[in-house]
Length: 223
Image (cartoon, rainbow, N blue to C red; front, side, top):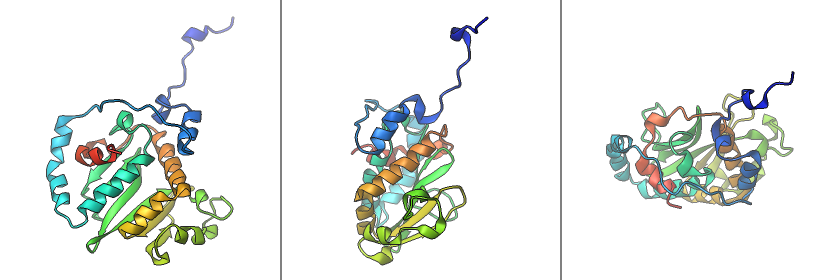
């Protein structure tokens, strides 16, 4: 007897797939779709108040205005950010880690984007797929397209890279707010960041929900 389809258990849908099918995700990555986000955020007032003091401390830093403006731009690399806020991505304010970042955006178990103080300026760290930054689009560490990276910043000295542990993962350091803004304005860069972020938002619930700072997220969601 054929199984009753209505009672056959289905594989559970995880991550961003709960909201967007693969085609919608691809179209958004390519900038070919405007996704319908939630009109209102599901906010925890307790969580918001938890990090108000840290947010106020950040605002006293000389880099504060640049941090907020750059976060506003980076927010465009998160799909349906209101609907997925905190549970599928988060932003931390002055997180208590040994590298002493100003802010960090994360999804699942993965760091996505971090801003650091660099004197009175800024330094950014992006994590992306290595295959988007090689000359032949393979995950080969020896084939990094350095000329392209240097084209994406104001001066070649402003960009560097490293290889974190993990398959097809690439780290890019960008120094100076002008170069960070130029980097985020490049269409190929934007597509690469969006792809990496979608990859990790599809891996399930965000492990860093407890450190989410709603005050910083306000800036990311304002654009």
